[in-house]
Structures are given as structure tokens and as C-alpha cells.
Amino acid sequence: MPLYKEQGIVLRSVKLGEADKIVTILTQGSGKVRGVAKGIRRTQSKFGARLEPLMHVSLLMYQGRNLDTVTQAEIIVPFVRIRGTFDLIAAAETMLEAVDKVAEEHERNVRLFLLLLAGLRALEAGPNDPAAVAESFLLKLLSLSGFHPALSGCAVCGSREPLEWFSASQGGVLCRECAEHDAGRVSPPAIKWLDDLSRVDLLGAGDMTPDAEIRREARSLLYGFAEYHLERRMRSFSLLVRQPLPALTP
Image (cartoon, rainbow, N blue to C red):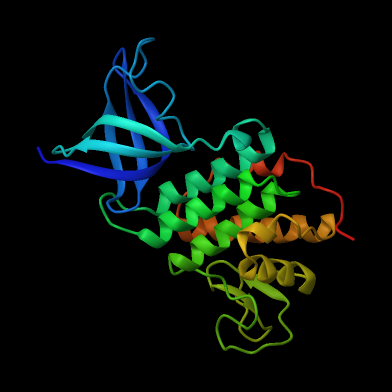
């Protein structure tokens, strides 16, 4: 079994047997890998808390037939600030879950790795609105995966106005002529907010807070669109919607 070195971000972990864990890690060079960390749940484990979700780690691993084996892990960035605040944890969990849904095992995707790293760094900086950072990240992830919603022109004909309808199945905002039966009415401010979130740098996303009604409408559109195109229910969305919205940015 070949031995290889990697760096990666731990997405999740599950218990295996009495003392082991299976960890899922998005690596920079090897894509998503699943590896066994033997003895990690013992008090004297050499891994300690190095393979907990959110950890950015340097790894030494053996390649296996079904699961790799983690033999060494060293912390690069622990993201301590994120772990200390529930709203930051909720935003980070959304990022980890979304990446886990789209990443393919052993398929190199450096852009996805760098996007996740940038997202966690933006949260570690302590934004005013962590959920907005997660939602901006989600839009960028959808774009990277080929599912970016149409937000500035009709998803079907390209017309720029009026755009008063939205459909996940049709790809985003729609003009009246193109809207089909499953399309719903939307307000221009909600679409503009999503468009702004899709364009802003992740470090700046947490400083953009619109009116609460606009935010709720836009969030509903985004979450529905993401679940439709990722073909998965996102459990972490319920954590985000429970967070109080920050005060309106002057």
C-alpha cells in the first residue's frame, strides 16, 4: 500500500468499532478521501483532537482498497474562533456539509479546496453576519459545480426585465413569458441581494446585511435552489435559520 502526504480539511467523522473513527477529509491534491484513524478514541491516542471536523491538517496516509489509513496528522490551522461561537459553527457546518455533498472521492479539485479554506478563514475573522458568509460561499460553490442561478437575466431567454419570477428547476429568475407552473413570485431586492452575495469576496460578505424581510425571502430561494440542484436535503440549513439576524447595516 503506497504511503502519501497530503494537507486537507476534515469534513466529518464517524465512530468505528470500540476505538477507531472513519474521517472524511477534503484534501488539496487527492480530492475527498475517507480514512481510518485507529485508536483515536482512546485517551492516549497520538491523534488527540487533530482529526475533528474543521481542522486544517497535514497528513501522512496509506492508500487502501476501500479506506485509507491515517498514520500521522499535524494541525496547520485549528480555527479556534469558529469553535467558540455557535453562529460561526452553524455557518461552518453549512460549508462542510455542502462540500461533502459535491466533492468526489479521489477526484482532485484544488478550486473547491481553496474555496473551503477561504470560507473558513472568512468565518475565523469574526464577521458581523456569519450566515451571510455561508450563503455567499454556497452561491460560489454552486457556480463552481455548474449550477449557478441566473440572477441578472431570465434563465431561459436572457431578458433583463421585468424579472418577477423564480424557479429552481428552470435555473433562476424568469420573465413572465418564460415562467412555468412551478415558478414563484419574487421581489427585485431579494434577487439583488443574492446577486450581490454571489459577487462579493467572502471576507466582505459578512458585512452586508439587508432588511430582514429581504433576507428571509432570499434565503428561502437560495436554500430551495441548492437542495434542488445538489439533490440532497441540507441538515445544516436549519441551524442557520435559527440564528438571529444582525442589525441592519447603515
